[in-house]
Structure formats: C-alpha cells, structure tokens
Image (tube, rainbow, N blue to C red):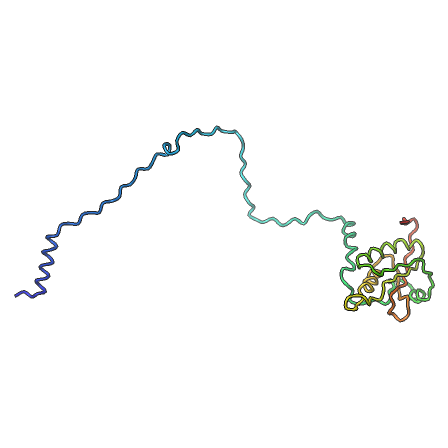
Length: 211
C-alpha cells in the first residue's frame, strides 16, 4: 500500500506533464531612428572663410618664475636706501659722538664753544619724517655758513608713554650723516633737548644751495 507521501509525489509529476508550456513575454518594439536630414530640415553648409584660426599655445610644463622687474641703477638704490635710517627706533640714545679719526679733544672744544654757532634748527612739532627731511636740508645749507650748528629736538616728555622718540632718532641720523663730524649735548647734565653739531667744511667748488 502506497504511503501518502508517495501519492503526493506522483500527483505533482502528473500535474507538471499536464500543464501547458509558458509563453515567452512579448519584447517591446524598438522605434525606428529618425533620419537626421529629415529632422534638421533644409541646411546650407557655410562657405570657407579662408582665414587662419590659431590654436592657443600649450601651457609650459614648468611654471615660470615671477619677474623681479628691471634691475635698479646704483644711484637709484642709494637714493631709496638713504631714507631707511630712522624707520626703526634706536635701542640706545647717544650722549655724544665723534667720527673715527677726529682728534681726541674735538668734543671738549665743541662743548667749550670753540666754534661759534652759525645756524639753529628747532624741530618741535615735527613728525619723524618731516624732521628727517628738515634736518638733511638744514645741514646742507648750514655747511656754507659755518662749522657749528645747534639742533633743538626737545626732551620728548610729550611722546607716547613718556619715551623720547625724536630725541633718539635725531642723534641716530646725525651719527650716520656723512657731513657730521661730531655732536654733544648743548646743555650740561646730558638731559637737554638740544645738540651742538660740528659739520664738515664744504669742498672747494662745491655747489651751494641758496634756497
């Protein structure tokens, strides 16, 4: 006697044989591609213009260094650099100065008034840039009048934080000026606001500025 399991197996085989084969699914129809000429319509080709169309240059594989500009002449460099003194405030304040090679008694004679004062410049109220220009012009003109001048730069009590600014700068400028031979405090004690400055005599035939 067949078991129930064998009966079901035989029934499945009978159903598979009796079932009709599956029909293949219909494939969608591919639309025909439209003709390009019909889509665009009537077109006239352009006539050749017989002109040259340059191609843009290809980039260099190595980057070019930025241009530093034309080299400056030595005189132009000197003119630019001469204003560099004074951009930075000196770290110390000179009480006196004598150019190397000057006699040892130069400062003593300057304090004692061996050279009479021929001109005086007062820099009160000047900015540092105005003071530098005024001092350079003053020295240039005073050298043709005499050798000793007086420069008043003030004590610097009105400067920010009470630190003298112009007082330090003026002494630094005088130290680097080619026509200054020596300078010292015009007042005793070393805390004055003025200097006695000994200037180099002008060379024979040197052009004098009468302005």
